[in-house]
Length: 527
Image 1 (cartoon, rainbow, N blue to C red):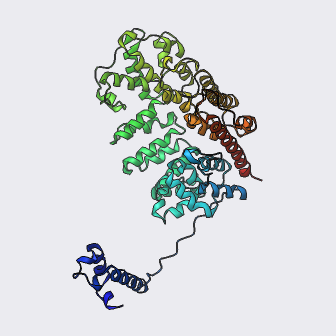
Image 2 (cartoon, one colour):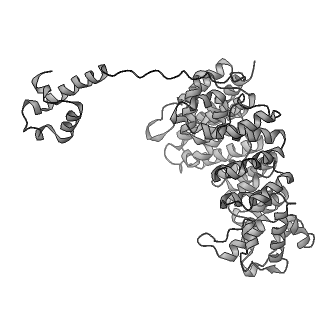
């Protein structure tokens, strides 16, 4: 080190000089010049690195538990690597996507298909899979299931993947046999949260009534947020056998746990809570009119009624909605003289008092909660009717929830009729609840509506959401039929400039995406 370098005795002094500025150190001069500071930094950095003593090696980690599931075929593994890299075609100038498929949007479908075949992720791709799940929460359930035990093993070693320890499925090879009571109890007492969630699900699938019994062994010592998630897992396979446990949870110290327990009990029409709610609701609503509750008493509070309404809602209307929502829908037939759901919904119940909208909205929530298809049909009404004139609700979000209670084929037919009557502008949420791949009648309705929009001279990005859904949800077998739409036509006189070329490009991307999806599914098929 030269004399200029010697002006900086140690690393801390050098850092201080860099922060203060060389001009303010010792009045400038060679020792305080920027060049001398950089020289000194170079020398000291080498000395620090050369003089660093290596730490003692830690214990070698245990090998990852064995995952007995097969890996996907080689071509499918290469496809997964490509999808995880997210290599899509370049975006053209002006924000145009071009004709290449968006690979990142196809990753969820690949993961879902691989899960159906019972594959595990190739070992070399598990880190990239965990990174993808970290970046996109929508991928986590399927990505972590595919990563399996090796994914959890890696997550314990990398803080960036810590989320997997609370959200993972535990992997196919991680859980003990549900018939091994001693091993189940040991894992339930000592396992990671993700392992316990997976164990509870496995126990529930084997014997539904055993899940609340397992929960009861540690319920009093669980954290509130964990109690809530465990309770939420009882939605799958919910039955009358769960009622004693859920009834006891109505006295939980956590308000959210109490509310969830009440919601689950109200989804059991024969439960005691449903009976209490029916008694309260029937006292408020009938052919003679609507009289909302005058107060929210202690019994209502214990049964999950929230006392304080959100901003802009009246107290009595808020309480009424909660009572009707939690009452079994079967109670209304006798109250209205034997009428069916469609006839009850059509009645102008207390129209003059302004309670019809509140009542219908609560019936919609009840139909969704109780998965009651007849009531959902009645509240949806005909798809061809104007949305604002719907018998139950004009809200497309509520209609989408009602549709989810119907069989897939009926759902697709209703949405197809809606599109034929009203076009695509309001259909996005409804399309999102239809089964994939879309049924032929629904797929044709969507494509015909897109073609009509092109003929009208609109730009395709006005329908980008629906076009994106079509890329992911249309039956890949439709690719050949759509080929005719990929040819660019001349712009119509009243069309936006260049719209025809943009539409041709969008349809080309749609066709290429459908063909890629078909190739993906073929690659995943076991030999």
